[in-house]
Image 1: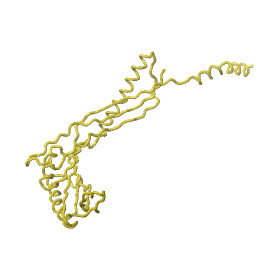
Image 2 (image 1 turned 30 degrees about the horizontal axis):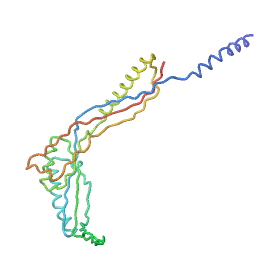
Image 3 (image 1 turned 180 degrees about the vertical axis):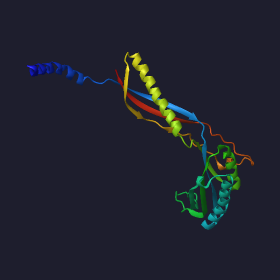
Image 4 (image 1 turned 90 degrees about the horizontal axis):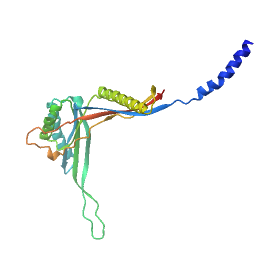
Length: 237
C-alpha cells in the first residue's frame, strides 16, 4: 500500500516536474564599453642615412662613416644599447630610364650608381628628450627621419581599469533595460571580451623638415585611449 501510494504521488508530480524542466531560461545579452585616457611615456624614432655613389663600395663606405656618427650621437643622448636596433639595411642600384620613342619603345634602364640605406629604430623612455634626440640625429648626419611613434610601454593596469568599466557599463545598461521591462536581473551566465587597446597613429616627420637651426625639434605626445568591450549574458528572474 505504501509503495502504491508513493507511485501515485510520483505520477501526480511528474507533469509538474516535466513542465518545470521544459521551462526556458530567460536571459538578456548586453554589451558594455570602457575607456581610459592616459599620456604616453615612451617614444620610438626611426632614422637613418641614405647615400649614393658611383659604385656600391663607395656608397656603403660613405654610409658607414655617416651612420657611425649617428650611432655615436644616439649613445651620447643617453639611449641604452638595448633600445637601439637596426631596422633596415640595403645596398641597391640606381637606374636611369630613357624617354619613350615615338614608336612606343624604350631602351633598357641603365645603372647610374648605387644607393646605400641604413635605418635604426631608437626607443626613448624620457619624453623630454625626444626633440633633442631628433636634433642630434639630424646634426650627426641622419637624412631619413621617417617617424615618431608615441605609446604607453606598460598598459596592463590601464587595460584592467577599462575592462572593469566595461563590465560596470554592461551591468548598468542591463539594469536599466530590465527595470523598464518590469523584470529583475539574476546571475551572470557568461562574460566575453571583445575589444582591446587602441594605439595612437604614428606622427610622420620628413627629414627635410627636421632642421630647426640647432633648436630642439618641437614634438607633442598627446594622449592615448585604451578601450575594452565586453558582452554579458545575464539570467532574468
